[in-house]
Length: 195
Image (cartoon, rainbow, N blue to C red; front, side, top):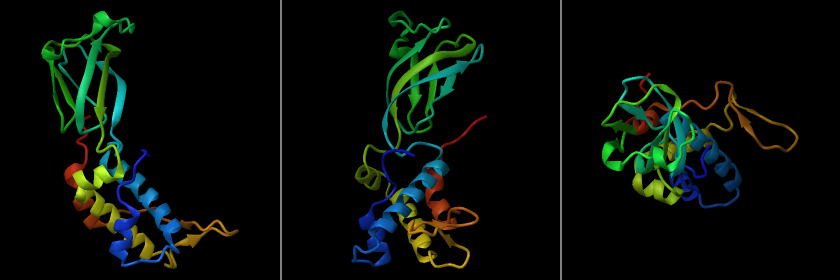
């Protein structure tokens, strides 16, 4: 799970028409659980940060797919079959291009074959803060808000089991299943996975 949430306590309380702070701890726990679930469903980190990743290359290939989208910028790409990744292995930025939405990094020359021969340092992920995520991706925040609301309303459901001993947790036998409407809101942001 990343360092940000997919929605805010204020949005959830507005959705539930709640003003009391009595259940803020429970709602915050549900927000964290749903945020992790949203991130897993999207197949990309919520938290935007700089990352350094290594990729295998197949002989003759011209592209790799970065793991965190959208890509907000590539600091550098290096190719080195000896894995030293010295400054001499830096690829000029005019020899590759990035599709920021999909994370496809396309090189003008074919890549040498080998495991971990491509190193890319880039910034990717949805947002740097929860507030930024809500502003940039209001439909993702709405999806998370609706999912939290549904879980909150179901908290007394007979299919849910609580943990004893004052732990205050809620457990669902089938796990946290995303609502259809939530999946519909998230699908446009879901990362394309090509195998």
